[in-house]
Length: 138
Image 1 (tube, rainbow, N blue to C red):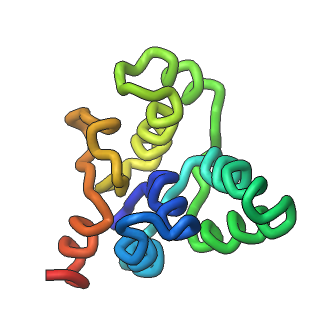
Image 2: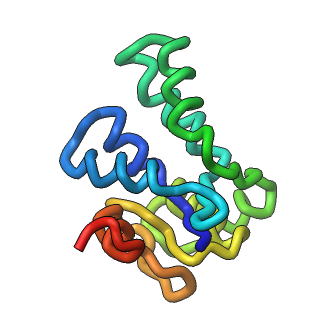
Image 3: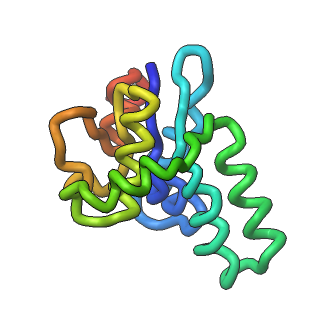
């Protein structure tokens, strides 16, 4: 199984916001070869950027590195950027996430914001739904 994990799943864990334990379990369950996890090249940079004011430069880098170390990073290409400008999804960053997932032919996008990925090409799951799908939650 191939999955693409949206930035908000990582931020749930780092900020301990609602649903963070399910997000943590989701990240922790992604282990090749059974489940291969992908992230956009944007993800570590945005995670680090959002955390730097809270914890400082070097701790934010360490958090971003640790959180994303077991994931394959999808290159951010010129074509992905150009195509992202044209997609009708509500946010540019989500368009990049979607196109990165599409590039890797993933089975699922995992996010807490399903409405931002309303399309018919890739199934979208919340962390809870993903954990149910793989049998960790009932």
